[in-house]
Amino acid sequence: MTKRIRKAVFPVAGLGTRFLPATKSIPKEMLTVVDRPVLQHVVEEAREAGIEHFIFVTGRNKAVIEDHFDIAYELDDTLKKRGKLKELQALTADLPAAGAASFTRQQVPLGLGHAVWCAREIVGDEPFAVLLPDMVTMGWAQGRCLAQCVAAYEKHGGNIIAVEEVPPEETHQYGVVSIGKDFGHTFEITGMVEKPPHGTAPSNLIISGRYVLGPEIFPILEKREKGAGGEIQLTDGMKALARSQAFHGVRFDGKTYDCGAKLGFLAANVAFALADPELAHLLKTELKKILGTL
Ligand code: UTP
Image 1 (tube, rainbow, N blue to C red):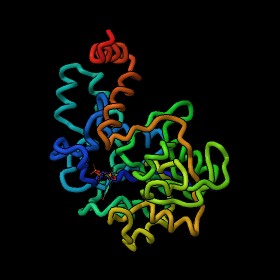
Image 2 (spheres, rainbow, N blue to C red; image 1 turned 135 degrees about the vertical axis):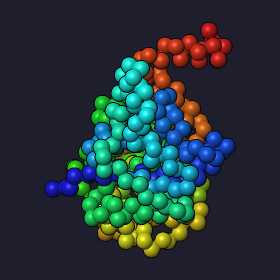
Image 3 (tube, rainbow, N blue to C red; image 1 turned 45 degrees about the vertical axis):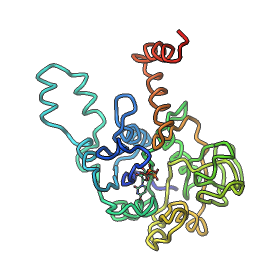
Image 4 (cartoon, rainbow, N blue to C red; image 1 turned 30 degrees about the vertical axis):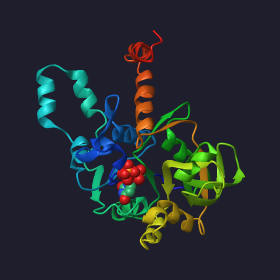
């Protein structure tokens, strides 16, 4: 019998250097995909998967994230007085309930593994989810990515990592897994490596930013061992945990956009706008004009 996954960690303390100068004063997680910040899309995905407590690991210049997930009394009041009820609904519908969001600081961005470790006191002794806010997912029939990971956790227990296929020449940019017993949608993970040098990756399945992990990861991350790029890597921590616990991969049935990179961010905006019935037709016309095909 598996425990319920109630808490999710959102590591949002990175510097976002790939989006400078935009990220000089705006956290990259607050850049918008259509009409809401990247981070809000990811929080909605977590809520859809049954998450009840949202833990944000933030850093300097990220206070605006806390404000975004709070009530804005003056704005609510103004919208009410102006009868803008649809806008008011959009503003308040997805707010975490009082006490259901926690914020802690990483202080120095020492790496993703360190960011996750910073949430240890709030997570406590229960399995939890991690969502990288850079990665925005669009699900098909089985829901978005975290919902599929939680379903896999309920089936296999242990630890779960969402993976995605990339062309072999791109694997050196990511964490890559080795495949053991294969069940199709899910499979046993027999190894992991962070940013393998060209031509050495064990597969073309990359770790794509959604995890369900046991609390036993925390004492491992506490050792602060540095890996690729001199950072404390989550992949290295998971690799150590895999010596004593099972890990399964989930081939996400849907589409992931890497909004931490310009191209992925732009593609996400186009894809989400095309999925919006109010925008799709108008955007298609604009795109045709830009491409000179109209
Ligand atoms: P990235 O390496 O993609 O984020 O980390 P970054 O460092 O902000 O981006 P660039 O490369 O400089 O443009 C993936 C996720 O992990 C978080 C980031 O905020 C991002 O959501 N992260 C990374 C932390 O919270 N702390 C860290 O020390 C490193």
